[in-house]
Image (tube, rainbow, N blue to C red):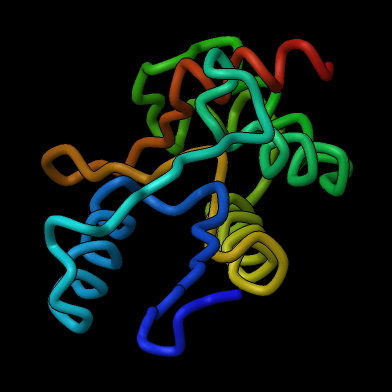
Length: 147
């Protein structure tokens, strides 16, 4: 039986949470409990290390994508870690309007917020006056396995 003076706190930090955010949660817990030296942290992963810890989210995002959204993920995966100009992505997807890619990205972002805790398998990067899309190498490996 537990001593009534003991405090046991169990926190789940799910995949897709950045190490910085997880660190802030742990630091806040240490500060609140005053257990800096006594706090034990156990880290677990449901995915293999080579998947980057977010493989299940990548799989879900890929499997739930259709049409040009899926084609965009596949195109970005063919160029892992490389910033690709929006115009090049739009050309590769045969988008006929300047608003088509931003509209598709907005839709994907809303889906990511609603269904994946904000996780997106790519990032938008601004370099100078131009926007680029970039997929991390670890994410690209998962997408390539799925395509």
